[in-house]
Length: 248
Image (cartoon, rainbow, N blue to C red):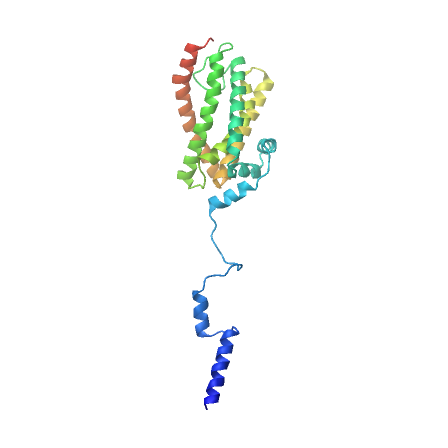
């Protein structure tokens, strides 16, 4: 009798070691944590995934500019997710501001910022346009991000919007050509305006990961706010100041 009981104990112990399921074994497995190397479902953090995606981007500045001009959504998403693109966006905005200021100095500014003189070449007008371009970029990036976040709970921030909005300002060079009276310049200016709107919408959509309709609404709200802010600042601060200090 004793030998039979010993044999039963040995068999049950061997069964547990060999992995045959039993109640004690199941309870232990339920309390165990997953071992390394096993595939377990997990939740990814959106910001972490964006950082990982941004670190893998290899597009250069010229390639990104071509992608922005051709309205490639993948390039806009890449720019939004790459923190290093902030410097590139700032460089683009500064260059655009200088070109815009030069065009404003040479031409008749009748399609740009309000509150500017429209007669003859004006150094003050050119400088005002250049500084106004920088203000539009900074205020636009901030306001677009705030509208997208609070209106549609978009997963974005000011730095992302500054990047995509900064790159899309490249179309401003075409738009300001409308200061000249040439029919070709007017056509190019209209094309620049259309591309600027399209690029801004794509940038807002890709950075905020929202629908195109929501991106359009965000852009309209932000543009109205930016226009009010910049118009007031240019009309009552920048233009009177530079007109007083600089020759017209």
